[in-house]
Image 1 (cartoon, rainbow, N blue to C red):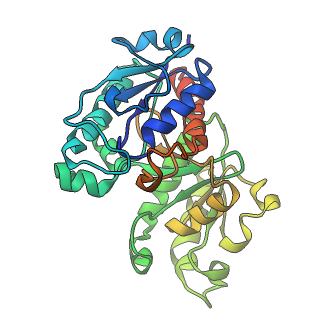
Image 2: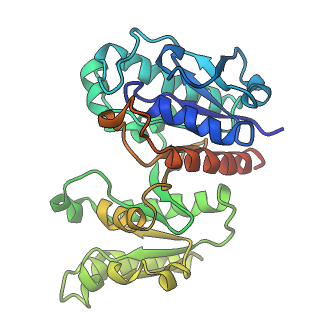
Length: 324
């Protein structure tokens, strides 16, 4: 029997609890997961059952959402984050990582958090979820991938101002990004020889230096060196011609130079079911590609598609990871 997935509660004042229950209602025991959080934070109209042992998830999931109880300081008002609950949100993530690293679960799927709530409420010092997970995993070097059925993208630089990108983009960073991506596609996605497309930084990939020199001085020499080591790399490619259907059929992942270059195409192609996957960890972690949505929390308006996709991908990757 496959091991269940752990689904963290995220910020309970957001849409996390609602989409968790909607996702359970759609999958039941087909994709068994255990929700970790405070049962008081769940909407009342869907059945859940508190379990003591993750192993009970399969038989419980058929009729109720399995819940691993984690008591928070306060109950919750939908749409109104509570700083007193910030430490509970952080502790749930750490507990989930501990359980998946111990082998009790096959993967962790994290519901959205609000970094400002955690910073103000609990002095959270990490830039985000991903960096905290990397720290819990012993300071691993990690990469963010957004994945859907139509496209997988990896931004080399992530949450920094655009004006800083040319300075942050180094050969060392790009090489680490390519290597971590290649390893993860082989180990978790089961792609023996990944075909990796690399975007240029500048318009027309620099057009032989007329529109910027990073392609000639930094990107191309690195790609040539890695090709000599057996990597299947295409590029540097003009980003404006990489993402139409014919082009996407030629590669397994696109590595881009900055955040929007990677995220605009995937969110345009597949806004509702894109999944955030952290590559480079010793365990499988996925996350829905949306925020806490405090503005619609508690209105039964949240779309569970991204959480469903994140749980399904977690199951697929987690079971592959377990068999390695």
